[in-house]
Amino acid sequence: MNTNNFYRDLSGFNSMKEMSNQNHFVSAPDDWLIVLTDIKNSTSALLAGHYKEVNVVGASCIIAAKNACGDLEFPYVFGGDGATLLVPISYKEAVGKALSHTRDVSLKQFGVELRVALIPVSHIYAMNKEIKVAKFIPSQGNAIAMFSGGGISYAEQLAKKTIPDQKWSCDFTPHGDFKGLECRWNPVQASKDGVLTMIIEPRDIQSTQSPALQDIFDKISSIALGAQPVTLKNLKEDSRPEALMSEAKMKFKNSGLQHFYAFRIRVLLSLFLRIIRAQKIKPESGVYKYLNQLTMNTDYIKFDDSLRMVLDIETEQKDIILTLLKEHFDKHQIFYGSHWSDSTLMTCFIQSQEKHIHFVDGSAGGYTMAATQLKQQKKSILMPV
Image (tube, rainbow, N blue to C red; front, top):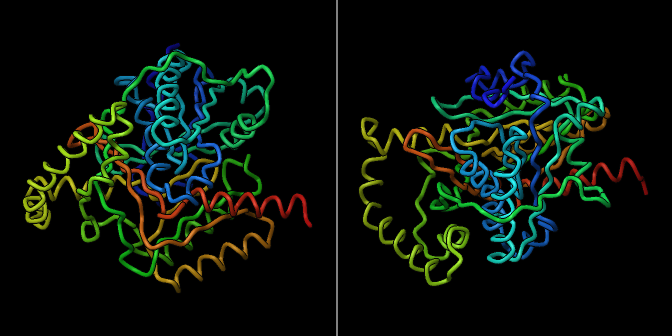
């Protein structure tokens, strides 16, 4: 049976309150492939100030794979310094070529090493692990994927081990493009005191439903009302040449073309900036409708065996949330990591005026710094001093 339309045909939900409802999660087909990407030593790149470049590379993995697969719909989750994707195994070569291209461009343009692993879902199932997929629909024609069951986390562990025969490696002739990649927004300044980026992992990660995570999500939802980090009020276009160069470097090898592209986009933005600013406050305008949908299509809450959140909140709310997480940690229910910053970075994938997704991460390292804290926490428990 052809399973290529698995994700396209998967029923979705349109309220984040339904995220923990396991009736929405369906087992991934066993003839699909897990695609894992991340930047090696991404923390070092972040400490050197390359925040935007790290996010651009992570988002470009998704965009290159989407472009390589044409009209195929498949689930993916942006992780800050990389991404997790599920695709039919019949698309292995197409995706492998696209990610080999992404790896080459990332190394040449930004000096970062992108790691790519391709692991069959069937192998994860043979290890008695589960991979379940759900689809959140923030607006018509757009979807944000969710993963549960522990299989993705197990695949990540496999990918990070040293495997002599490199059976999960991605060795294909590089070929791909980053059509749809756009990085034209200023860091979105917090409208409250700051932005809290969190990764919350249940101790029993193989469980398809965690009462602790459900409790945490419900309480955070009531504590942090209106915490969406990207709104019409704090969106500001970024036409600085240096801000546009990350996008230009991914799309063009030639430095002259990079500067010409960045200059052209800057000129176009300057021409339309006044129009955008005037129209985005008029509910009947196309600009307003697009930008309103943009705020809806940000992936600021998602689940990939761990709960990931980027929230714009008050300091008092942050303290309450971190106290809540500490309580669940002390009860041996979760591991967690967090990062506090003053803004949100946004990288966009624009396929059309109606079809667009916007990947968000806390500035100054966001998810990567939260993941580092989480790993240190796990290490202190598993190997106490």
